[in-house]
Picture (cartoon, rainbow, N blue to C red):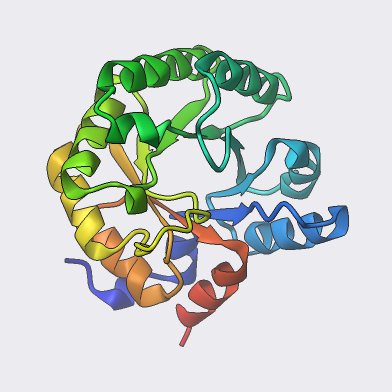
Length: 234
């Protein structure tokens, strides 16, 4: 386990996808909130498709990359719709990664072949265009066994990452990227896929605990980035 003192502000920022996904944001609010992630040197800013051009302007000349969500936040569109949206995102250029929401109702229903097929089609599209694919499985909606199955689906579908949450699920069970959930995913993944912890990551302590469990990335709402990274200097 890494000592907490070993994590500088810059190191922690390198784990963060700074999410600016509020659909009510105006153009000015989008720019202002995206710039928070850029100014702190986050790994990427994660935006909705209609904010791509704004985000590209904001990250120009920085080391921060561009991540875009697909079929967000429900994941229940037809596979062909997801592929069309992903292609439209990719066609904008300079896309680092796409975060697609899986059809987690099908995961709950045991329709694993359909889930795997959809992920595989998306991963093939992304990879042939040199874009990474993260798959959001909405772990708060799943049982422990369903989470394990979701990990297997993402591995077999050849996604680059499995991601826990959209942050928009409003069920009775809202723990997001808890240590227990991430530990379960890491044990099931066995190093075969990267893990993005997203949901309820709002402090430096939680972020470092997740890093020590082995995550490769964390999704953080734009209201939490400054708090987390400023804590790194305290």
